[in-house]
Image (tube, rainbow, N blue to C red; front, top):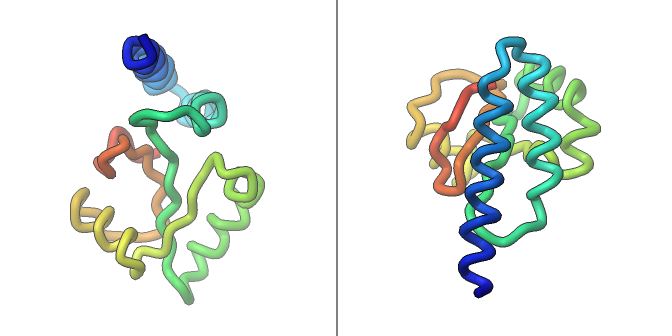
Length: 115
């Protein structure tokens, strides 16, 4: 029964994410995604995550980290240095070529949508 509940939860989470992605205004879509991430972040299973890729010594990265600071502090957005092993894996897997970049990743580290 528990496995079936996880499947239902996953389907609901995916539907909620897709509703956010369908919004035409990027700001509204991002706000919607942040609510979905906050709602599901402690659930078990394959959940999406918002990741801000940054690099040491990058002024625009510092500005982005400041802009998203409240969401980083609450765990809604995860800041990852692109030079870290996890950051390099995300960059390579998704063929990213610049930072800062805010991306929505599936649980396998693949981009669902650049934000």
